Structure formats: structure tokens, C-alpha cells
Image (cartoon, rainbow, N blue to C red; front, side, top):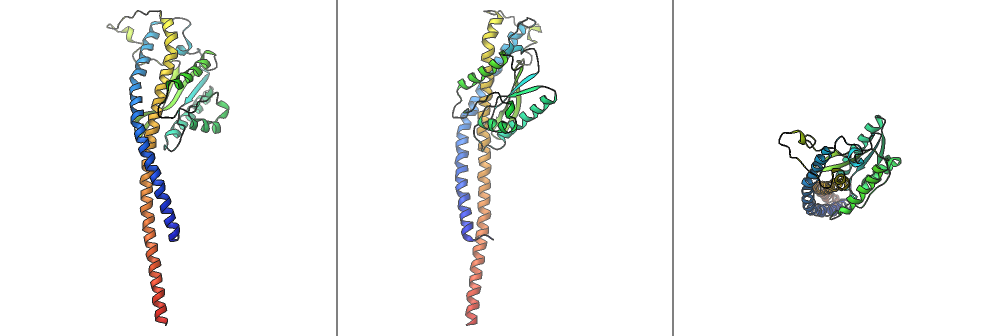
Length: 295
């Protein structure tokens, strides 16, 4: 059985830990409000961007020489996976969910005879895949966590992906990230960026009787060349915002659980401490009484 001194030291240590986890919970909650607002505000824009490009692509369907960001390279051999995680830990299973889904996707693609390349975003993703699949990493991005995520990060990442696509090094590009649902729930998913997946119904809009007829100025090909790289950056930026909101939500939940667990541990150890102290007092009284009787 531990001594009273050891129990006091352990209780003090857990109390200090509880103060830290409680402070981290409040900080994550404060950051979550802004991150959640940013992620929710970006969703309609990203969705509208995909839909608009889907209608524009439908108008140019069947034409030769479609941009690679729209139609891909025409092959399906080399897949680029871009897992998005945080730079820091202490957020429960937030990062491990992305790691797990990415590993499952790698195994599935490799079993189909495909070549896989990785472009991890976030220090946690880089460290994990450096241990698991260092030979598959073609590039990486870290330093994405912070109070605000600048669009320049998404712009630079989009340029890297565009370079790989245009150079013929990659045929398909897919994002793997956590979509923010609420503070307790983040859903890991894969979103294919290249070739671009049409929004549901966008390709059939021209077939309906009441569909609008569009005239493009300048021509459709010029618009696609201008908008496709921008759309790639917008989709990446929206995923980064989802990741930031999910990270803060997961960290707030994890720190809340840690604070509660610390409180339960303190209560349990306090009971053990009181019982041990009472036992020691009782033993000392017995020794005094026994000594007095012997005299």
C-alpha cells in the first residue's frame, strides 16, 4: 500500500493535470466557435463552385482536349492521397481516424494493382506515414494549425497537386479528411478532386424541359482553364476549415473527458488517503494503549 506522502504527491499531480486539461478545454471551446463558423460559411461556396463547374463541364462534354483537372489524364493507374490532419495531438481519435481511412484506401488501391502516392498535410500525418509508408510520400505540408488558416496554404497545396497532374505523374487525386458534424462527431471521408466529380444533377440539368440556357463569355474552354485551378484551391480550403473545426471539437471533447477522469481519480485517491490515514491513526492508538497496559 502506498504511503500517505506518495498519495498526497499523486493527488497533487492529478490536480495540476486537471487544471491544464480544463484550461485546454476552454481554449478549444473558444477556438471552436470561430472555426465552426468558418467551416459552415465555406460549405455553400464550395458546393456552388462544384455545381457551377459541373454545368460548365456539361456544356463542353464530348469535346477533345478537356483540361486534366476536369477529366484527369485519361488513366487510372497512379492515385495521389492527401490526408489532412492537425499539427498537434491531444484530440482523441481525430487524427487516427484519418490515418485508418487512408491506410484502408492504400490497401484497397494496391490490391487493385494501382500505384499510390501520398502528400500528407499536418505534422501528425507526416510523422505517421513516415513510419508506415515513407516510400510513398512525394511531398508534405505542415504548419496548417493556427488561429486562422490563410487561403495561401490551400493555394500552394493546389499548385503542388496541379503540377503533379499536369506533369502526368498522378492520374487521380483524393482528399482524406474529417468532416465536421458537431463537437463530438467528425466523420472521416474521401473526396475525389481530380478527375472532378460532378455535383448530383448538374450534368442532367441541360436535359430537363425548364433548364436554363447559358451563353459563356469568354468561351467555355477559357473559363474552365481559369476556374478549375481556383476550384481545386477552394475545395482544399473548405476541407482545411473542416479539419480545423473538427480538431478543436475533438480536443474540447477529449479534454472534457480527461478533466472528468481526473476528478474521479482524485475522489478515489482521496478516499484511499483518508482510509490509510485513519488506519495509521488506529494503529498508533493501539500501540499506545498496548504500551500503557504493559507498564
